[in-house]
Amino acid sequence: MATLSPQLKQATQVVATRGEGVWLYDEAGQPHLDFTAGIGVTSTGHCHPHVVAAAQAQVGSLIHGQYTTIMHQPLLALTERLSEVLPAGLDSVFFSNSGSEAAEAALRLARQATGRPNIVVFQGGFHGRTVAAASMTTSGTKFRAGFSPLMSGVVVAPFPNPSHYREYGWDQEQATDFALKELDLLLQTQSNPADTAAFLVEPVLGEGGYVPGNERFFAGLRERADRHGILVIIDEVQTGFGRTGKFWGHDHFVAEGSPRLPDIMMFAKGIASGFPISGIAASAELMGKAWPGSQGGTYGANAVACAAAVATLEVIAQEGLVENSAVRGEQLRAGLREIAAEANARTGVERIAEVRGLGLMVGNEFRDAHGAPDPATATAVQQEAARRGLLLLICGSWGEVVRFIPALVVSESEVDQALTLWAEAVAAVLA
Ligand code: PMP
Image 1: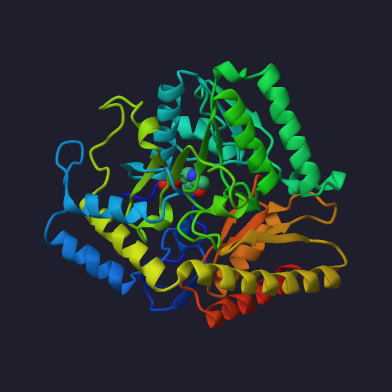
Image 2 (image 1 turned 90 degrees about the vertical axis):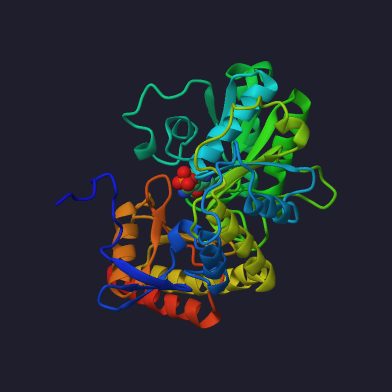
């Protein structure tokens, strides 16, 4: 019998057979509280009835259209529906199947449109696992180490991440000063603007540890981009579709009346409740600089995925999921902060150094008794929680952050249940 390849690192031994809302059921019928949502993919919860009905109906009428030759109705319907939520001016969309492919598409478009080679990425960013996307990823060694030669033309600038500079006592302002200053130096010394096609950045570092950016940093990027004719690519793969309590993650960081932040925006995950579909959005003018045939793929904009995406967008709007994400996120962070404060007081050390995030994208950062990142404790608590029926994921440059990313439909009592199980898991490990 074939076995699964060891590259597929399993966080838990749960074999899911059924999902409903934020719950997964295993072979024995045991419920598990799923606060991973498949890394935020099941935005409307597992098997939301409206999404299921739309996908089932679509399977019976047209499964595949091959969009490079045959246009199909679900694709047109999705494009129309998306235009209601895309940032103003991003009126042209290209579809692919995964976040990594969206990163490839954004990279290609930026190079084609500017005729420049370099992409500036930001420390701790994650953009995918294809070799080009991994070359632009710096959220941990496992995505890059051993795959050289990576794609050339990638230059890494700092992200305003105070947790990386905790020993210096830097706050977000100081980390932002540093990041912008280093970016200027880098444009002077390593990637001349005339060679720089784009800045590629997440609004909130995802795999890099759930670290939100900030308004001054993004305004600084936009201003430098405008000054030098550089494009801004915003990766909303993890932060999009209400995950952060606003529709787009970058909505948190653009002041009223300020220019639009992204020239190119990547999206995936939460768009279709688990069906594989991703894409990029840009202005029609910019998108027009990609020559026909330079982007595409056999499965892009699969008809069933498009129908599921339309239904997902309907559920997000009808059920007020963006607002729910904001409110339940507040509840979750407040509860986690109490648990962290209690554990830190009990152990006499800041073992949970920070609870942070936006909306339902929340991280707990673990440090050891000497203040160093502590992936071992993060994993121990995650596994202790899994034994109690609470499924969570790890992130952070060292794997030192346990993240909570439930479906946006999560209720007040489900957040409370998760907090109870987490408190038990933390108490068991940090005894
Ligand atoms: N960008 C971001 C911000 C992501 O979080 C991810 C996935 N974790 C990707 C890109 C890559 O997406 P995929 O796994 O679908 O290729």
